[in-house]
Image 1 (cartoon, helix red, strand yellow):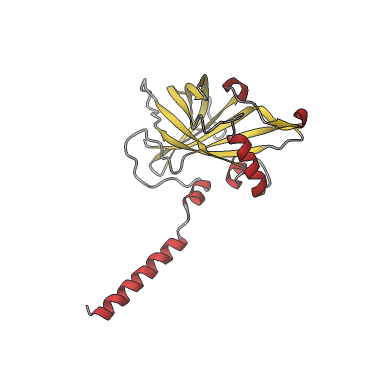
Image 2: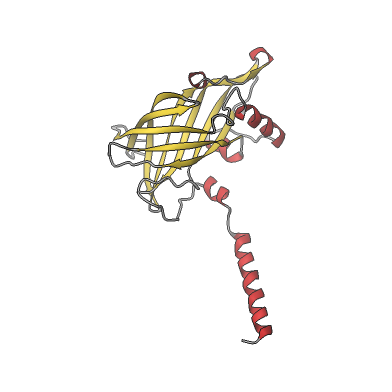
Length: 229
């Protein structure tokens, strides 16, 4: 191949690669669409950290507003085969982001939130009186047991009961989750939820104007996880 032809071939290849990158959907888009992951897992029980998410629904008090929050996992394993040691989920509290369109949609809230308001909500949520992410950057769910449920979901599919201990800000409480498990694209898609009280973990629900505006003590937490079978 002559030098001019080599240059032309190289330029053509670069243009083709850039075109493919421009049309390839970003990770956030595929995750929001709940697309099954296609990459190979390291070992059985591994959580796919790129696609798995945790969502929180925050209720309102008085003239306050409801919020939807999304967060990522820092690491995790979850074995669903009945072994005595079932795994650990470690949540990255610094990643929690309030009122993204995907978060609001997932928890069933309508409408959108402007960036200025989102910034203020995130500042309050991550601050010292609530999540205090500078001091407590992670939370942990230690799974102790997974057992089949005798209650099918709305579609008649089987469910499992996931039991364990949830630790947030150095305080631990027992948690029981009723979860759907389905096989999708070679992965286990696990979806379930539980509720906590902020005050049980030393957090103070945000409020102002003598309590006329604020959020509820109770939080609804939902997991949307992809697990290697």
